[in-house]
Length: 438
Image 1: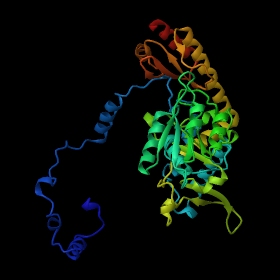
Image 2: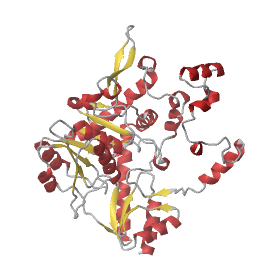
Image 3: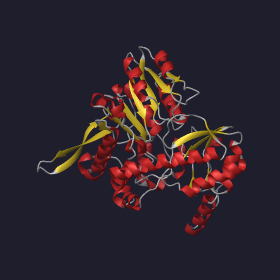
Image 4: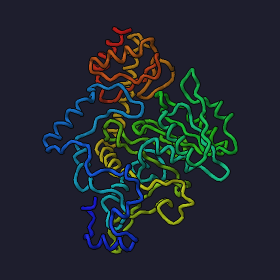
């Protein structure tokens, strides 16, 4: 990198002398010769742009792309209107990052303000931050929000996405916080509310529940909310945001914090990311939410403007009081989600949710006719678990036909998913494959 440092050779030598060295070699003399990297690197010669392009295409060709997808488990294949990427890929949005100089970042501030407003409307909450990295991170950050001096134990339902639970455990390990997993009812796939009531105590900070849960089932949130709040703990609800187009909002359920992954809002599967985590909470907990909140105001001429209304302490002088060290956000992904929501509108989002429900239930009926059985007899949204003796055979047979089947949970269990993109013909085709295998 020496050639990229904007200092002359004379200036570099002067700095070396100030540090007590005659040359760069002299400065590095304390490093053993055997660990120093030689001038000659054992790497191939550089290639032309055309050659690199061909090489990258060969590597990309190793990826298996499925036109038909019946798998969700946290990342979902939805239709993205063309206008979404057209706007989100505009140069002025692609290059905008995070508003450290807020006064001259009016465009990005407005996009964050619009995003926060939409998240509040969807969740029913009072405030939302400028987003975090993904849904799992949002859940872990929410756990940190809820901790108090005498309440520091985090409870998580066994029915949340296992990756979310893993991230929560990682966050809590770093801050010496206990994480206790509340078991699921094996018969119904829901959180065991009786066990929850037994486990909560005076040190309980919060309980994290996913609705619909990892198995696609709608949880008994009314009972959970009453149990958690009677114990003096906070309720953190993780929701697939598409469900908020038709189900009750976290605020209507009485949740204290609403989190989730915004991937279904205009972000493709993209081999796992980048996505965005949304976070919203009540006004009582507003000052504990990590990241930043953008507000609307007027300037000295009375013109509409945007400002950073609240910023978490982790970037400033009172860092010892911060509940988080996160200092970035998914600005472009949040903008994409905003454009998607503006494009589909409230009616469009409800239509997406309704189609997901209808097609998932049609898929479930066809798969049961084909020989599979539903593991849980409870209301579900757009995911469900089936049982059979030949899970591997079903998945392999579908793959041969260019269909990505559900996620294998065990040798006998498959987690299926349907969205508005799945057609009746595709559903009937996968059912025919299952019937032949079983």
